[in-house]
Image (cartoon, rainbow, N blue to C red; front, side, top):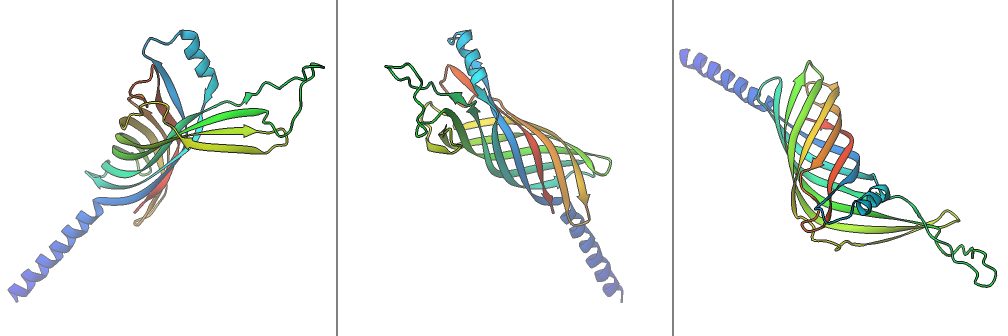
Length: 238
C-alpha cells in the first residue's frame, strides 16, 4: 500500500513538473508589414549638395518580413525569445518626370503615348533574419519588446518602373550589383505591444515596431545607407 501511494505521489509530482516545464515555452509566427528607408551617411568624400539631392530623391518603400519564434518564460513578467525568418527592406525613389522630346521645326513637345512620362526605381534587399529579444509584460496584456537581430543578406534587386500617360506601367527587374553589399549586419529592435486576444491556448498580438541597422548596406560606398523600418508587427503565440 505504501509503495502504491508513493508511486502515485511520484507520478503526480512528475506530471506537475512536466506541465510546468511545458508552460515555460511558447511558439509562434510573426508578420511584420512596414515601411523602410535608407538613412544616408557619407564618409566625407561626398559634397553636401550631392548628399542632400539624394535625400530629396529617395522615399519610404513598402516592405514585409516574417518569422517563426520560440519564447522561454523566465518568470511571469520576463520572457526571452529567439527566431528565424525572412526580412525585406530597401528604398525607392520618388516619381521623376521625364523630359519630353520637342519637334525641331515647330518647337512643340512631341506627345507619344508609347513613351513613358514618369519613372521611379525600387531597391529591394532580401535577407535572413535571426532575432534575439527580451519581452517584459506589464499588467495582463501590454508588453515591451527590445532586442537585436543578426541579418544575413541573400540577394539584392533593383526595379525600374515606367509610368505612361494612359495609366499603365512597365516594370524591369534585375539583380543589383552596383556595390559590394555587406553580407552580415545587425539591427536594434524596439516595440510596445498588446495581446488583444489571450486564452489558455493562444495569444494574438499587435506590436508597433521599429528596426534600425547598425551598419551600412554597403562595405565600400562613399554614400551609404543604414536601413530603418517602421511598421505594425502582428502574430500568434501558442
